[in-house]
Image 1: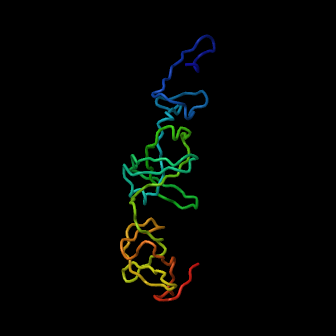
Image 2: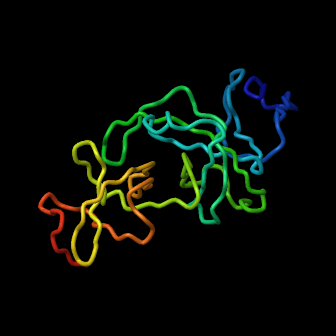
Image 3: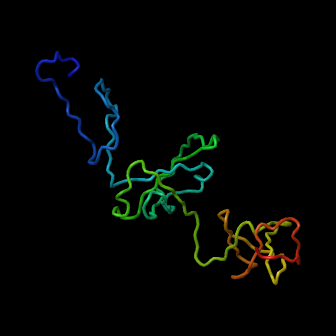
Length: 208
């Protein structure tokens, strides 16, 4: 209306009401101009109702599902608990820091902690997300680097009285760093990490 005005007298003013109560999170239009129907003017949201959006590799996204627990860290405050609400059904292409093309998927999670625990966390802030795919109490585990396979059987070298003893083991879940041992070892057994091909059963070894 003001654009058609001659500059004399009052011009028509059109009230624009926010659809939700909250704070202005972003300014889309910074100057005057023609605004089309449905065009964004401001970004409005409730800072007390944040959700967490995490970009994960599509290879990892297929292992996630609604309800999975998430640990949020690296934002400057205490570790927060969250749960996955949605795994988006559509991926997108992204370029990694090394210049590698990757297919990623957005995962949406809701914070479980009370608002007073994360009241300083704001829109667009950075967080590190750890997804809990599996957990158990009182399990025996060894470094994954200590396990090798021979003839289809997982094995380790135990350190017994200064010598290496080949021992067959039954393994469970692994996160790439630690592997659960179901059978073959006992608590307190010492194993050789990164055994090379020259290490044989009964060879004398020395702890470093």
